[in-house]
Length: 554
Image (cartoon, rainbow, N blue to C red):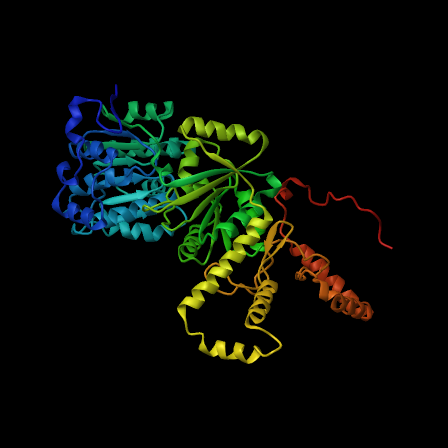
């Protein structure tokens, strides 16, 4: 079956047959009043190009294959006409929407619920792995017209007989290219085979690319589909400042720490190409004092939901994820995205950086590169038709200056807020002939300096002090991820000043006079702390027990 192609340009449609769909208002698309009311309440003013072209076609009953990038409004493009045509008097499954990941399935379900707010008796059930299947079976049996799920769990329900397709009239494949990349081709074909019956079925698909495998599925299961191709610049790049940071692989973690402290980001996303790198980086960031956690495919759904809730609430400031999280992860206030590893495909790059700069906000994306990796950056630039600025790794002095400026701004804000009378009286009591107010302020600043994060080996080491949100950070582990210099217990020792020599000498002499049992206890604690140190990023490639022994036991 030959596919008819309609190409949509940024200004007008390139086919006079469909000039009527090039509209600036949702009201011109023939949408029902209840759905229009929900759209207006959600704040949508005008449809996107993909919505303008697809919604009338789906409403007319045509099979549609849309090619568009993430962030173009694909979910509403199929959700609006589905809800417009749903039969609320029937409790049978009428539509199945298949998504590549659990996160995207949950997000799509949320959009359906919002758009169906003023339609009575519409039930949407998400089905995906990691959630108790009995709960899903109960929801489907209670009457769900729309089922949104991942291919694997949908097949489980079909084989169990808990999902009946006798009244199915529409199948939607969202992110079809990603489902094929994840190995779901046979599952998709099996589900489409189950859906083939006496009832006429409409098939809709959205994909960022049109690979030969996708075209084969279209030729086999679609009925003369209309091809909608949205061309132009990837929308997720708008409003996002993008930088390439030149840094060796061994300096990437330090580089992320410097950028976090230099810019005072509150919520950040870091993407890795592998689950192992993700887990290792989490350990490194936690050892540096950052509230961080991982999100990848090896985690159960309950844990993933818990991590995402903590991230949305700000209890996790750095979320480290694989590309699984790039699809469907929806957090509006992410300040920055870091590509710890360069994405393997330009499409992944677009999905990653699209997690920041959402809802009209500005965002920033950093990609670490060095040596031959620059060729991958050039490839991304060439495919996406953009130029990414290259910046050096921030220096230690820049990080220190940023921390001081942040503190001075806090002082200014405190002065402007007032309520200082009790403290002024205490300072006035100290300002005798011996000290001036300026000297007292300088002494307080010096005390603050000794408690604030100290830069150790190019990394910010937090001992005590104020966090990004004004909360105390005392008791957090060192951000250096290493024991303090000259301190085997790893607790971190303040840097010596000129007047501290005698104090350290007395401490050292006292330590030398400790009993032998005390020394044995100290040795035991040192060994224990060394065993608690996080593995370096190259640890997975070092054979365990492979260290060369220098001598036997004496």
